[in-house]
Image 1: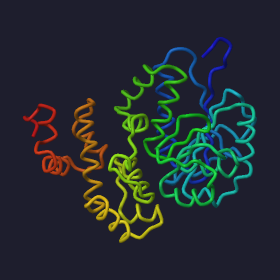
Image 2 (image 1 turned 120 degrees about the vertical axis):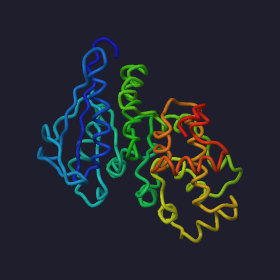
Image 3 (image 1 turned 90 degrees about the vertical axis):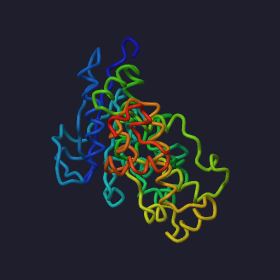
Image 4 (image 1 turned 180 degrees about the horizontal axis):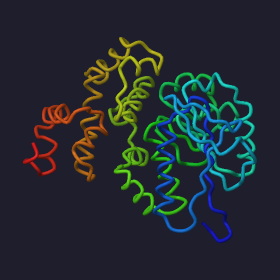
Length: 321
């Protein structure tokens, strides 16, 4: 920050049914940055529309500092929403967001928050992302928004995160920009977190280009697979997201990839696991979890069948097999 610039203030706005996971992930990153960073700490406050506690998706709540007030230019407004955001009265929060945007505050939306921004007219012609379950409906309602398959956007305000650990990635990105890359890496280390999605975000090759064809539906499905490795989606969910049947999905994979969706998805996860084992210091167990394998034995068995060696042997540590 330059001299005379005020310390950024992170203002969380919690909507009814908000994603507790996205909120706590983002909050912990900021708290760790304040604890271990140099200089003035970020101010962090948590608001709701009327200043009263709101219930999150898990039935809990978080202490609220107050109601929506006057946004400031130094604000990073972080909107956290839930699954039924489209059925809520958004007039008050939309007015707050428009005002914040007019005075030059930075806007961020976690989980399904992009819906509120789009409804307020703040995403027209801009890039955004949203939780995968909302993608199809969002594209139909807001065709003027450039909806990307990335798990978070970092080109300009408004910034968006599609949920889960992508909230960590988005906050680490802001820490790196507002403070330093060193502090962002330090915070990630305290979380025992390797930012897989940052790697995907900055160096991702379009799936359709890699396999050498162009089919809109299949390209979108492959992109969804690549951005949902930690929590793999079911074939029925993939099909529903792009508005086709599960049978049509299977036909597309047989025709263009000579594989079932499950086999292709598993192979994609194993390839990513191989990359992480070779390119990061993550433990074998952490790599397995990050690539959607629930047990170490299941991960090791599939990895050996695919690559002819175990994850530990690839790391040069056969004694742990």
